[in-house]
Length: 131
Image (cartoon, rainbow, N blue to C red):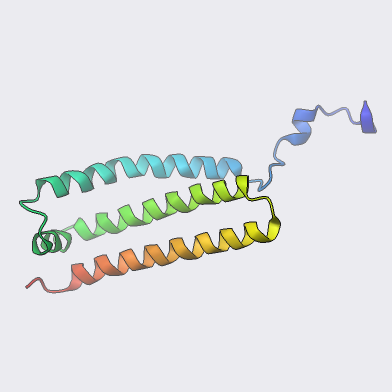
């Protein structure tokens, strides 16, 4: 045996992935995927059953009842799912360390900006008096 170790190559490799949290990303993507199923079905069903897709009708729907809560939840889960997926792709395919760090930071910033903009838009519609 090389190096005098009695451990197998598998036992030495376990828990020593590039980021050491690959399982966490895997589970996060599965959980957000499962959460997106009912949220997306709700969203599509709600839009299809509206009398029309005119601005005033959609705005009134988005401002009513629990709709803004579910809409914000849909946005946040979607963005979280996207962040996780893009991060995995960057970590797997960008090999230059400075470029990888820059890409990860840019991805986080763009996703955060998108989430804040969407939540702001939903809140603005939800709390504005419908004319």
